[in-house]
Image (cartoon, rainbow, N blue to C red; front, top):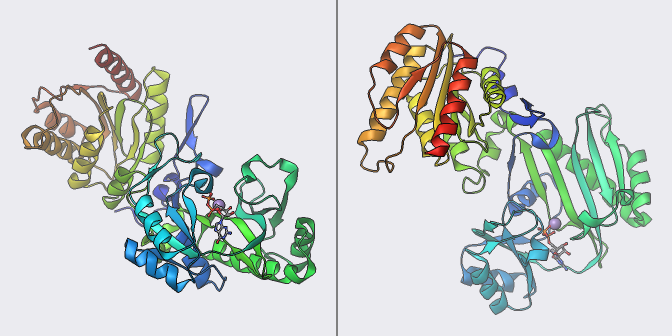
Length: 431
Ligand code: GDP
Ligand code: MN
């Protein structure tokens, strides 16, 4: 295993953006992150001593009614999905009685919620959160994120918080870069509070909250922590009414406690499946399934394809010590993707042995052709290029496979392989 090496997997897991036909590591918003639900984010805030509205995840309509009773009848019923804009889309509604809370629960559960952040297909609501309804005097926006250019955590705040914040002009936001040696300072936070128009009684609360949010952000390796709205209540309290947190995927290995928050049903289940086998798999838009070892080579392969007019259906890094099992899994993930017309295998044998990869592929092919759940027969040509450790043995193993669904061709170089794969995809498209 390659555990001891300066882990390319860690830095390259934050795959991929394509700019001007060149693939490179994603930066900023394109980084890989793990998102969690609002109620989970609030649970984390609570753990760091930040006051949040009383709330509970309802498990049934009856439970929703009981929760409403407990919170004095008036509650906010909130659909939990990994996207914002719920308020405007009807995913955040008020209930004045226990019965209303129960019927909103029924209505929400299983509903497909389409907000401006979900895309037209929307997101299915699988969890419903019930919160005490509070009386808002004013809504603010507050977020912490990473400014890569300045290598600082940036605090963004606005008095134009709430559902319309996306329409607010740039001038409505104040931005403060936080010095990592000092953290948020009383001085800069006071200035910020003043610019937000917070009255003096509220400024100390604001500073206290920012300090704790900063602690959450840094201790949990967040990539985004957004509170919108941060509400000034009629009774004078300052409370986060909504909270969105994203974590940097690359740091999750040191936060096993956060992994429990992962909601596999949200996001791409294949990516999660792959991660269990030590594979890094990311779905892309094209139709050529790629199986490559090493993230750098995987990216180079995508570029080579693009250069030859092909588009990749995925990024897949087998990793340093991929086992036959992992290869088999990788292959089945690729062929389960209905868009895949051609498979390109590009392996540079080093620690990974080409014959082990070939053996995994052979098993996966045997499995696909015998399985009772067999995929409807398709024709998926494979182009394979092996180089390095046991390349010859790997090739021999693949040559022995005679399967109508997966006819295999070989290429000596990466470019030749990319050319063949792109041509084959074009030909398959015309079939
Ligand atoms: P989002 O639209 O997905 O960002 O969902 P939010 O949780 O931000 O809720 C949308 C809006 O509902 C907020 O901007 C608030 O105006 C309102 N809201 C949420 N919780 C409460 C609450 O406890 N009391 C009141 N009065 N309004 C709330
Ligand atoms: Mn919100």
